[in-house]
Amino acid sequence: MNNNNNGLLVILSGPSGSGKDTILTELTKRDMNIKVSTSMTTRKKREWEVDGIHYYFVDKDYFMRKIDEGQVLEYAQYGINYYGTPKAPVDELLAQGRTVFLKIEVQGAEKIRKLYPEAVSIFLMPPSMAALEERLRCRESEDEEDIQRRLTIAVDEIKRAVEYDYIVINDIVSYAVSDICTILDAEKQKTFRCKNIIREVINNVDLRGVLKNHLSRYSLVTATAKRARAISEDAEEKQIILTEKPVSMAIDEILSGKYIIIEPEEIRNI
Ligand code: 5GP
Image 1 (tube, rainbow, N blue to C red):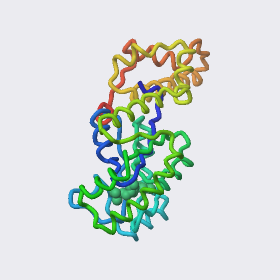
Image 2: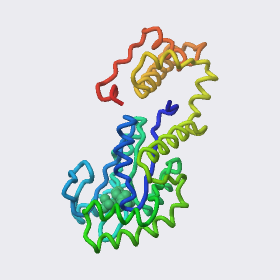
Image 3: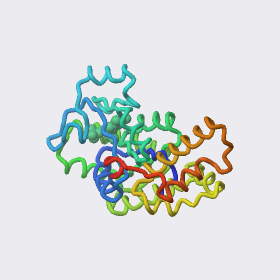
Image 4: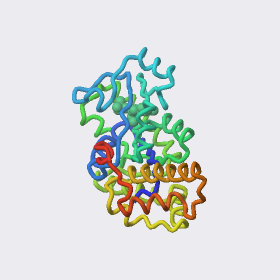
């Protein structure tokens, strides 16, 4: 149960070939609330990659223009190419309460930690350098020069794994995915993410009944806040002193069916 209206931002780093894409594919199958941010890159598209899905493939001029326009959350040079995270989609998804994964390298991770201190960072570790090299060669997407460049960068990246909140070894994919799910579950229960629960329980609001009847926690929280605001504005206008908290009154109205929430299609799927 995610106790917070805001989403969870998760940084996933790991050397090229550590299996980030495979892990993310499995994670998104297990948890529909997870969204992976699509980065922009100046690198050439690999044969199997789809523009707009794996990356937005752009030229350097466009990339730099987006940075100047303030539309990039973070960016880094990796090898001979640039990679960056578009800002707007990440903020939108977090506001919707989604778990947003940034699949970024170590320099970008450092910037995100400063911008979002509450972000969770996970370093995906290959079981050995030999296994990493074998994976890089097996995928046949890089030439020898690029493989050597990526292996050199990998050593520096692994040294910086100490900067992360968690290290997950990716030897067997299903184990690594389970480890990450455990991390996410624990992170969602952290006290600083659950402050609203303390407030709600003190206000004697039992949310269990309400949540049973609504598909999306996001729309429930939004509707409750909206109705509570309307109740309080109405009371102020009519100069009535409320004996109950507006949020409790709003929940009562929702529970009794007096105030009906109509969930838009896109919210229902969250
Ligand atoms: P690749 O060329 O193998 O797709 O990616 C190379 C490296 O760039 C990987 O470590 C990947 O995680 C990282 N990367 C991908 N997108 C971004 C991004 O938006 N920002 C940063 N800083 N790194 C990224």
